[in-house]
Length: 183
Image 1: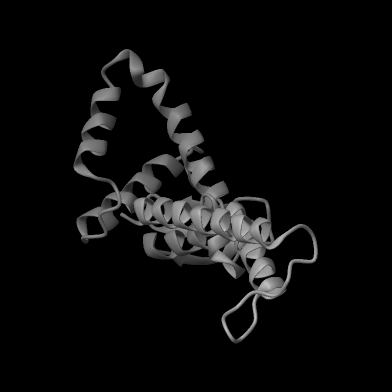
Image 2: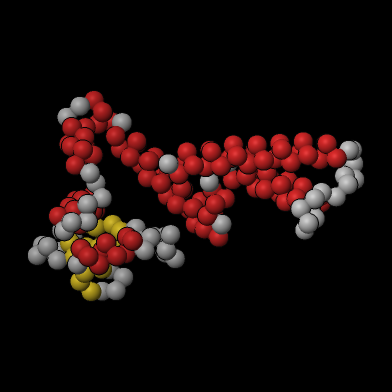
């Protein structure tokens, strides 16, 4: 969130102009949207009545963006929202939407944490990494540039060949799983 945890107070005058109480100047809906995008909460109140108009203006910002072609909300979602106002789902929808956006924010935070290594979030990454390490260990400890194998340090040569066959089978299985995920 932004440096200041207190919501930015915007007062709406009778002329419908919006007044930023921190900077003592008038602001537009686009400027309010920019404050929100930077993480700042806003509170918009009617100067005369003191009524909280924040929801009304937030919906207006969304409607303006949607009408300009910034379609974030699919038609079926908008339709379901309209339906929820006339059904028993009305009480469930706000909580569901709030939790969904919280999960989205958490997911984005985790994605940014893993940004330095985007593969680390991929399912099966740790198993693939372990198999890769075992494969490299097997290859570097028992392989010579001439293509033959060095004598095994533990057990017989057949045991080392079995390990390599097992690693090859695991690698083939992992490649199959990865191709299904990318499919």
